[in-house]
Image (tube, rainbow, N blue to C red; front, side):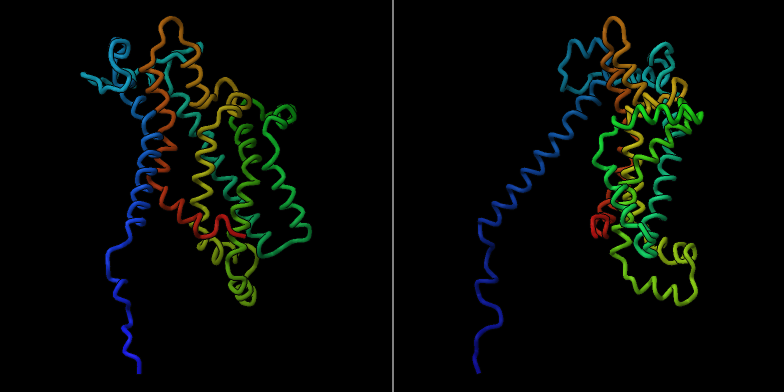
Length: 299
């Protein structure tokens, strides 16, 4: 019988220097990428905490000697967003009123439609799926004028209902793609067993499919929250002058100022507008990665 050791002696030695250099290079690249993304945020934060005299006389990169939240207060309550000078408060409320239904409706419709196409497979389902996916590759600008005419004819142009309908329409292709591919990765035996037990369409969806859908629902919600909250074009065209979201009001703050530009107020307004997506990613980024890994890009 051979007396060769189970583990070679060289396996216990130090790792090759090439591996250490590779890891060091990886860390350096990650640090450089993080710095490139965080550097503009640092400039925005420091500028928003300065008064205009400090902005003009000091370094754009330096921390303010006397930090102040006056620019933030002005951006929220008194910055001019056009003809009115009431800050971003109204735009924040409008964005919330647009956001909630514009996230709930596409996610719910995408889940039900993806479930139907994955398990029930109705006649013409593949044709419907392909037709909706075509919408992913057509620029939004192509549909703007027809949508304006259609929404005007049914009384939905220039109000919350109209812009929610627009967001729902344009979100359906990506929602359907996410849910359909995720459900296609689930075991078909679960569906067949539920059918044998007498489960119908909605019973199987509520008791079998929906409890397993948490990862992909998180992915869909994060994508939709980010897209709706950061939207500018649809809010400008379809929301109406009384329902403008924060992104449109931020543009008005930057472009409607007269005389000297208040860069500290503009930076504060920009950060306030971006807070919701930042908070969503900060608290749910881990779940987003899990959802993607669980099957969001399978199928």
